[in-house]
Image (cartoon, rainbow, N blue to C red; front, side, top):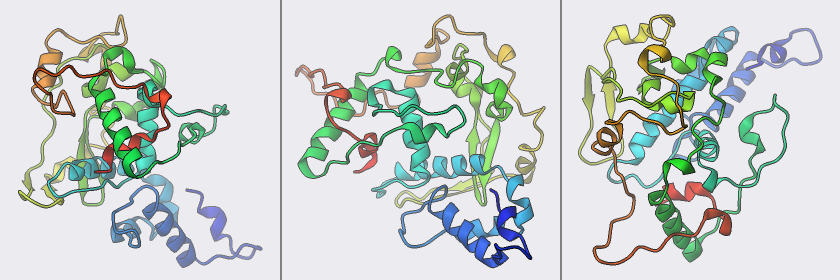
Length: 292
């Protein structure tokens, strides 16, 4: 956030603070904190823009991730038919970790944003979109550990970004979502273990129908983000470096399968399932998976 240059007084560029605040409000609301209304923005964003001198003090990346986590949870609720949040972040994450779904990529300098190197493929519609959606779901069901790039940012990426080892809730306004790097140790080049239970909300309201829900956290949770030393996962204490990228402890897969859905499509008894086409054989956009 480089707002200082927009607030110079006495120079050629004289933009009022209110105009800068409105610009940032629209920018953040249409990129990091997107909702389903199409023409409205979350008023909570404005709370962080009142003092332009504090813009660089906020962890915008953590806030965007917390908001996206919440929207991914909302998308699984009954009656929810679309997905919002920073889908550029989700799409870039998919391309980084799953080579089979990657589009073409442009050469780029090391200082440029990684997400800007991907060439977004053509978005099909109608029957073609539904057919390709079925292929993508089959392909996901056929994925193996060898089809995943476990360390797309290198085995030592966490040394450059120590906050990636933070464990605890991450927040944006009234939204708080759990973040635990012990659940994805293989992206750091370490053997995956069965993680400990995460910090849970004090209370929650999740209606049986509808797409919204509210969680309530104890007040002490707000202080965890500032305690970096105490809330940073010690990789060497938790696990050990992988001998091969997808390595896990022996009990991990059984633990994971009891807490996840191993398949997207329903199995058909007695009918052999065809091997799906590889994604590079068709034009695709992976985000079709979330258009139901």
